[in-house]
Image (cartoon, rainbow, N blue to C red):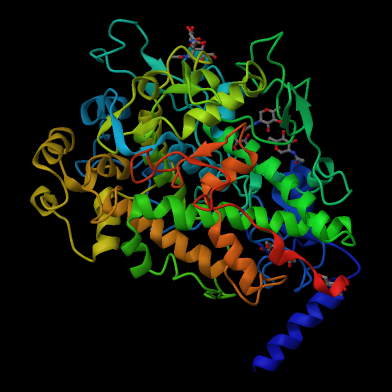
Length: 622
Ligand SMILES: *[C@@H]1O[C@H](CO)[C@@H](O)[C@H](O)[C@H]1NC(C)=O
Ligand SMILES: *[C@@H]1O[C@H](CO)[C@@H](O)[C@H](O)[C@H]1NC(C)=O
Ligand SMILES: *[C@@H]1O[C@H](CO)[C@@H](O)[C@H](O)[C@H]1NC(C)=O
Ligand SMILES: *[C@@H]1O[C@H](CO)[C@@H](O)[C@H](O)[C@H]1NC(C)=O
Ligand SMILES: *[C@@H]1O[C@H](CO)[C@@H](O)[C@H](O)[C@H]1NC(C)=O
Ligand SMILES: *[C@@H]1O[C@H](CO)[C@@H](O)[C@H](O)[C@H]1NC(C)=O
Ligand SMILES: *[C@@H]1O[C@H](CO)[C@@H](O)[C@H](O)[C@H]1NC(C)=O
């Protein structure tokens, strides 16, 4: 039986060798003539299908994500449908669910102002850098198309015209709103999340399926641009290098002078705008620039060690190392601080240091909606007054983080990139509590809109995604039933549960995000228990479903034992030392605050976990 399966697999690969196959993005199966004709008629072939060259079981991880799963080659590319931990729930016509009473759920903005405190507080032991890295890792698996949609494309949601637009789902502001009763604003812009239906890939009236334009595996989607063919514009095709541009002595990915995406750039000085990377929030762009540079640094060193290697080998080896570092830092350095290391080991999210192989070809590479959505909880810990420091550790000035949204040009002037990097590991991050920073609560998009409330949007989006009530997820996680508010007494402080009881009539009404905002943290960690459970669920799927997972000993081009050891040594401090802007000293655990246990240390010290590429020296060349 097994033999037959292997034979079949090979037959398919061989048949397809000569030509690429067109796959349907949603179903993941090759498109037949009937379906192609429908897509052609709708003029959306490019949106609903993806062309994939025949897979080769021994090739590198492809930039566009295809062929990760050899049985389902399109799974793992952009527009792979998401996984659902619990099936979606809606009322009629895929509109948000109703309360148990049959009436509407409370207004999202009301819930936000009633459930969250607004203000500033620092987390004693965690730096701003941690929040930057979290957002960077979210941006690897989720696209910002929904934000682009209501910021750039459909900007009339709060006008009479917008009220008639199906795509508009503006946030209603209660008349007694604590902030906007003084401003007169009674509506905030928001559009319906885009789906396969929006792009005509599924018929209207079929179950809402959210569309995501990022690959559902950790592969530095923004650094390398996973859109099919785009990588060709980023490679120099010489010695494995990517195209870099220098401005004011600093290196950046290529710019597009005609782009209209960097809305907050202040010309004439700030003109830089990524051509092939997301022009995103400042925090994730900062880390992305660093990983982009790191690719070239790795490629140059590999070339020095192995002068005979060709461009292709240098490029893919450098990319592979770069991706492995991004994930090593995320799983082994950052998440243990937030999730609790013991919890992660118990649940098999991290191992003990050696190789691990949990791959199962029957598990498709997908991200759960709940993981992607749950990441929005971290909006609560985002501190928005950035403290900028110079290379010698002197405080320069503060800057409102939200003023840097979609403002890539800012990085390249006034040594801002250097000052942001230097500040990231010196400034304390926002507290893990039930308070949200002023700018997150009422500005978020800087000057793009007069006012926007990220947490109210988060809550509202959850309803449009069809997420089940909080208690159902809690039940999924604990196998216990939660039918009354008393059943939740162990999971909330008296005060937090009291607020929920004020706002919701029935525990089954509680929105997932509203529950997460108040829930007690997991033992040993800093995030709510149910959130931890949903994250763990996804990360375990990631380990099973990513054939190219860096810890696998038998993936194509797998690391040797010494190479894996070298990857394990790299810390975020080491990354900043080697490519950060004039970083010459840093604390060894840079997600943790500077302290007597974690003092500023010279980059040259062996206490800083830097990348040593000697295990990649190819002795077969000699
Ligand atoms: C073509 O593909 C669609 C969707 O995958 C399927 O429903 C349909 O039955 C197929 N038609 C033929 C003629 O195979
Ligand atoms: C994709 O969809 C958008 C919006 O519906 C449409 O404007 C565009 O032409 C489509 N592109 C392709 C390549 O099908
Ligand atoms: C598959 O890829 C490997 C390199 O990764 C290459 O040596 C081999 O020739 C490829 N096989 C086919 C059939 O293209
Ligand atoms: C916004 O509009 C542009 C131009 O019509 C289109 O190319 C793009 O896909 C749209 N973006 C979204 C997120 O709908
Ligand atoms: C679905 O509805 C939208 C908006 O009403 C419309 O523009 C689109 O053409 C419809 N799609 C299909 C496949 O009928
Ligand atoms: C931030 O943006 C707001 C709104 O556009 C503006 O009023 C303020 O001056 C900006 N602050 C800085 C420091 O750029
Ligand atoms: C909504 O968007 C419009 C158009 O961009 C903008 O003028 C308005 O200020 C926005 N509303 C709020 C509350 O920011």
